[in-house]
Image: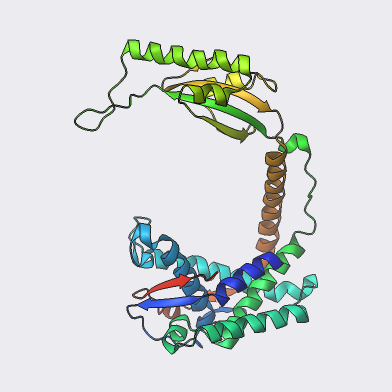
Length: 339
């Protein structure tokens, strides 16, 4: 929880906004949704929306063009910003439900966490004195503190709901093999006038096959597939995988699965390439440990989803569509993370 909170807090502290274009002025006190009898102010939703928008515009604007939130990225006639708004309302439903249920799980904020939130919000407001920026974000000391409070409680509630998750994962369950392989494409490097690859002739393919076989023969002698390939100006790749990973074509995978540590396949030919696989390890330690973490996280996600669905049944949630519609995307917002 502390790690995520620190990341969010640090990002907010360093949030420097550049505005292009104009959005309508929002009354952040309006209720954009109501959970049970608790109103959710538009200011909170808009602040998180604009923070996410600034991230997207900053990191992907160069590749996808200006104002990503006004683009129809899905090709369904709906601009991306509207899709984000829908997702964001689900997020706020979760935030408010988890806050409402926190006492049942003995979850609350410590004085240290409250102080950190207040300090973060104060520094954010001091770092963004421009009233136009504050208006675009519907940012105030109270709103920033409230958003950070909700996000912190969310993390603490997830920890509480994960309490019964089995975190024991055996090496056998998570085992990841490590292999080095050479991929020799059958596609020619030359192209015709239309830019299409010119197929290799039969003689060229035979020469390529002999070259790959020579690399395999040398690798078996030197016990170094990468070095043998490099000597022929080719490059190998290293992968970690398990039975559920679609790493190689079926015919290559069948041969790789026969290997023990240190062994090589023969030269395996497919429609598109020649392959050589060397089994480096039947259980790579780093990859296996990473897989264990992934398995535990999958268990946590499944348990949270199950318990959260049960908690949702305890509450009503109504979105005020007319208020939600007031958040528009004529304005481009960019973010700067200062080191």
